[in-house]
Length: 466
Ligand SMILES: Cc1ncc(COP(=O)(O)O)c(C=O)c1O
Image (cartoon, rainbow, N blue to C red; front, side, top):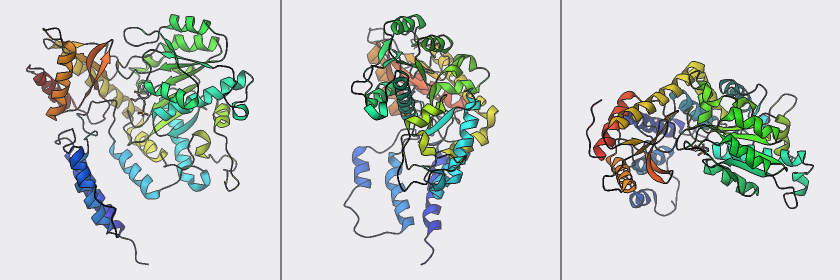
């Protein structure tokens, strides 16, 4: 058989990718094409016959590229979205080329060992105890799900109930307590697990769980409990007071899971580490590499302080499996997935390329940019900053002399989105409409921030001088 045309298809993909990536700084951030155009460009009947790979890649790029959001741009501030550093992206390409199944050691020894090493580096960087176990999952949603699945099984085991054998019907109720400002993925994870609704604990004006309210809620029951704490709220960026919450929860026998999708990365910065003081005492942690580490999607990690509970939750067997021998780590023993992508390669490359100091600089730089946004916008007439900017999140409101601050704020967001210089979204904070700015991209510069501030103020009918 002739050698397949790898050069043709990969060469075309390389040229397209390079043009896209090098064009990011100048490109409008939103997608240019809408739904109808994309359906027309990508749709049509199922092709009848094969086509050349290079031709297919070129056709895909031509049809899809107008519908691509430049979320890797330094001026993308929506949701909490990181870009991809050059080393991480290239490693992700290699992960595709090698196409390892990171389920079992025997399927991909390098994929297994790279996770083992990256997990150790991450635990050190994030200030977690040595010896934590780790699972590489799709993102913080699945990291929360995984941590909570382990917590549920372990808390029931301690209460004398075998979840694997007897299921949840008739099991002791495990109460799950979390702050009012928790992320919605906690509730969704609990729904998947059949664990019922969260007991919502009162939070302060920044969204931080109140320790006294947690103590009171814990005291209302004496059965098994799980406390979900948050490091970095998706709106304000605020941190639950972990140094108080974790010991209080433990005194009650509760398992503490920390959702640190992006906030856990504060631990990598000597200047910001104080925000997560006490985090190392939790029982499980969820975070993302595709947010602040700027690794391509999809990349989340769950860490667990009790590896035996972690392994017990995902125990499985099949006659045809070839389990790892002494010391060989089967990655699927730590996640709810079996076959999957070798997510460890880009994480390893990101950490190797940035190093300890590079991650700290990246995190601090983004937080500096968030403060620059808050200072510049807050100094303008008729603009309010609603949160204490402790991390990379800024909430902005545009009060209206006529009293319709919600309407004006939403209109400014709409104009900013339509303008194309940057992209950001909106939210509701304490019943007020707010603009949300999240600075999570490694490539954002001060010039990007100033250009974006000018565009936001222009949308609000004001001018800006840096
Ligand atoms: C605090 C928090 N938890 C969980 C998530 C969910 O993360 P992912 O979308 O990576 O699954 C997010 C996403 O922004 C988040 O901010």
